[in-house]
Image: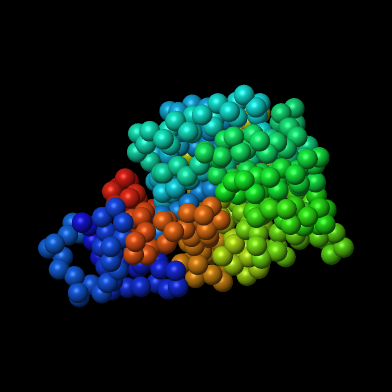
Length: 381
C-alpha cells in the first residue's frame, strides 16, 4: 500500500492540504496526515506539488512519430507510453477519414493492444472514430476521397472497441445512423466536420448526438441569425464539447466564456498528431502532408491539421486564461471526459473506490510523476 503526503490534492470541489492519499490499485482513503502511521506504507513525498487525478485524452491521433491510423500495434504502444509523461492515464486512440480498410486495420490494432494489456503506458478506453461519416465541405485535414455515407451497422459491428464516433448530422443517412447507434449501443455520438445549420444540428441532438468534435473547428460558426453547430452545442445542456486549448485552434479570449457556458460538459482534448513530441519539420496526417512549426501544424494549402498539444499544457492554458480554479480546469481534462465516455464511476477524480490513476505536477502543471492503477509508471528527473 502506498501513501502520498505533502501535496496539494486537487479534489472535485477544493484543493486539500495536510491530507494523505492512501491507495493500492484503488484509492482506499483520503485522510488527515496526523491520522496516518507512515511506517505502514510506501511513502511518496509530493514536496508541495499538486496531486491530481490522471488526465483523460478522448481525442488523440498520434504522438512521437506514431499514428493510430497506421494500424500498427507497436505504434499504439509508443503513444501510450509517451503520453503518460504528460499525465494522461486513459485515452481514446483516434482514427481519421482514411480508407475503410485502413480504419478497420486500426480498429483491429487497438483491439489487440487493449485486450492483451501488454503495454506500459496510458490505459486504452476504446477508439474515437473521427469520420469517415463527415461533410466534405468541412473536411478540414480529412481526406475527401475516403468520406462515406453514415453506416450505423459499421459502428455497431465494432462497438466492442469504438467508444465514440463523429458524424455530420446533415448528410444523407446521418439521422438514421445516429438514432440506430444510440438505441443499440453505448457508443457516444459526436457531431463534427459538419456544415449543418442550427436546426439540422439540433435535430441531430434530438436523435442522439451528445458530444461535439473540437468545438469551433470544422463546423458552422456562431452568428446572431445563423447560430450554426456552435450555437446548437453551446445552447444544449445535454451536449459535451471538446476544446483544443493550444491558443491557436481557438482564441484564448474565449476560454473563460466556454467554461462558464458548458461547465462540466467542457472536455479538453489534444487532437495531437504524429508530430507531437517531435522536432519541427514535415509529417503526415491521414496520409496527407503536414508542416509542423512550433504549436502550428498546417497542410500545404494552409489548412490546420491537428495539433502537437500536450494535455497537461491544455489544462494550464485553460487555467491561465479563465476564472477557473486549478481543480476545475483539471476536471475539464479528467472528470468531464470520463463522464462523457461513461467511465466516471472508475476514473476522473481522486475519490475513495476509484482507480488510483494519479499524477503529481508542479506549479506550471508540468508532470513529475504518473501513477497508473497504483503503480508508478513515470517519474521525472
